[in-house]
Image (cartoon, rainbow, N blue to C red; front, side):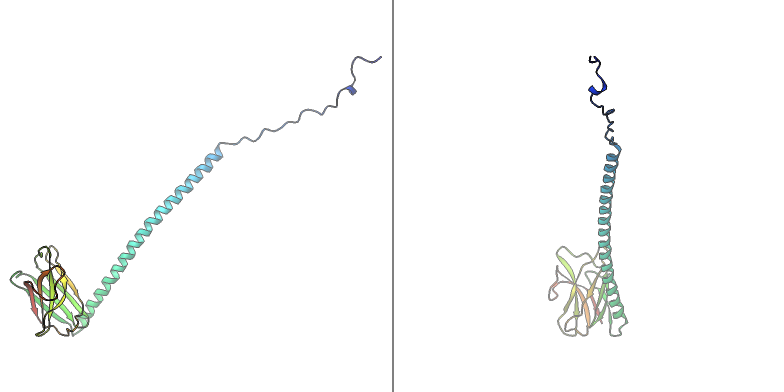
Length: 195
């Protein structure tokens, strides 16, 4: 008679205990925060570097402009020194006339290099007017040596270029002319000096 209790052969073979599956690794919230912070710090560093670079470029451009201006000034000073050293340079003192009796001026003049005119004590010209320096050679008509303005103290200067056709100057004069000057003097004379 068959037994009422089933034997081991009637049970399927057991596979053993169910395998343990490890839990997926838990992602830490710390790493995304670190990466975000690092990216923000990198971006801030790039922005700061760009700003500093732009500031330095502007400063460098300003320094280059200053250096160029200084080079021009040095060349002008060297020209003046060369004019002063040359025995052919004329030094002419101009005295103030009736409109500005206390005004004074000097011209350093060299036929081939030009020269320098410096004045003091001139009144401010009226609106639309300017001072004009004239070179007179013998009995020839005056030749314009340029126009100049004066500061609030009445001081003015003018770099005078060599004048075409003028090798010697017998006198310099300053007149008050319309702004921009004229080809021939028409206004009142303020300064006069003979060499």
